[in-house]
Length: 468
Image (cartoon, helix red, strand yellow):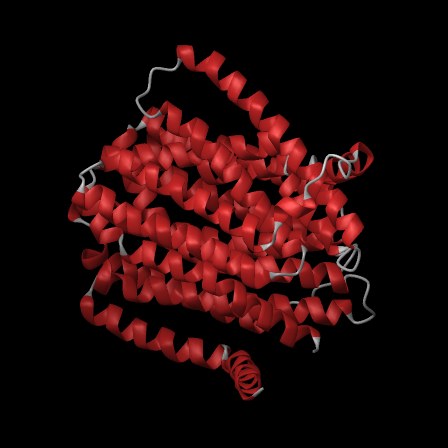
């Protein structure tokens, strides 16, 4: 199976677990925004944001390290057992240290939801690592099922807890906890992880090697958190937690893009690592870059073009301010896709220091722009600072990564899609029904035209796969 076919096959498998549950969550936005107050929605979003901050600090990003090193020993069960055992024992120690620190610090935290921060983080740690172990062992199917189980259970319990039992924010946080626990149990028994964990196989030398790779990703993830989530913290502090609820609702649309790409990136990172030394690497990486830019750029255009017709159906009127933030955040999502794609080059070369350096730069830019403009621009400051940060990181990584892979750009396509974005966004903010309808039709035609080769290629691959 050639590289493109393998990439499509793995992406299709992983997509089942990620995309389905994210789409369900997205279409439940009308329910969430109708039942929950802006404050409750803001609280849930803020706690999930804090979990995202503490996760890499506690794990030292070892889940990325275990995946990368398992990738190199898929035919050696002894090495696999050593890597898995060393990782699991490390996580147990780290979790105990974290809980002790939390108990000490929690005496000065006066928040009704603080204990969810403790237990949800532990559940996230083990589900994240176990899923990456599954990927590292080459079992994308188990990864997909585990992800789907976590997401589906969380969504179903969300509906039950907040609609039937009226548990509000408590219900959503409890649902997330149960979803992660069930995901962990599934991977443990599906991959028989308990058979791979042994005190004799625990090797500090191997652990140090993994941590040497992964620890440089900690500042990278914290920087990503700053870019993605510092906005919410600043909004909550300066504008109030209700405004954070509105910003969170607006962000759900760009999350569709980043979630879809995260699925592609999971399998793309693996392909990048396996082909980084290939003779035709420049051509291969350029082809994949162009594919992603065309697909995700067109998807963002489509969302902006059709959202004026469905916004009132998807978002409750009390979150109406979110309408004006969405296109800006979608542009940020496009730069996010570019940044993530280029980041796979550094992962493939095991240059995690370079990843951290560029991410820290973006985080600083994000905070400075946000703090400098939030009192003047309000919510727009958070959206614009996100775009500026991602754009800066994308430009830097594109130039720097050419030392390893020279990606070619299609300038005619870039000019055409930039023009379409300008036209579509003007129509979006004008909110004239006739103009929006004309632009939506133009976007559909443009999308089909620029993606015609990609669509044909994917359809041919799917047909061959079904025939086999």
